[in-house]
Length: 165
Image (cartoon, rainbow, N blue to C red; front, side, top):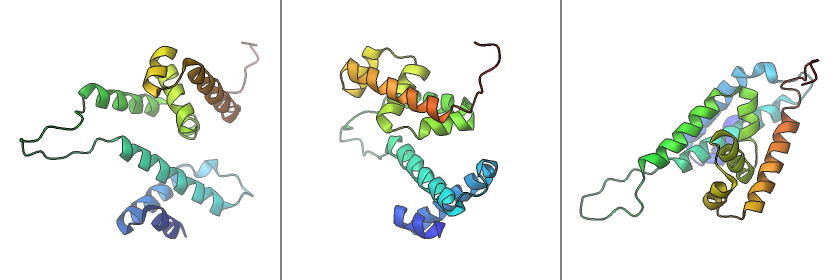
């Protein structure tokens, strides 16, 4: 069943096999997160879908390597800084606990970008506004809503201590 859905998503036999394998590995890795009494088929399909989305996004961020014969100019040069920033963010996300990383990954794209730039890369509202191509007010709104979603999803992640802090 997972393979059939993966094949519909990828439309490629090899990619479907890889996607199915990755989803099953994640399911086995996080088997302790499965709640008894819930529908395992839906849980597995959610893992498969999220794995597909994450791999698609990762591939779309990876620069396409094209061999040039030397006579034509590159359309848009890829700077080491741009590649380094994406790698640095991925490295920072890897340092987070699985629950937090998953909660961040499940945020809507615009919210996730704003939260990552503000909270991990420590960019200013103005910098985020310029990068995302939207007004500062929109950045502030996306940050507020993204952080609110994270708070709700991670409410049980770090139970409040009795110290009152």
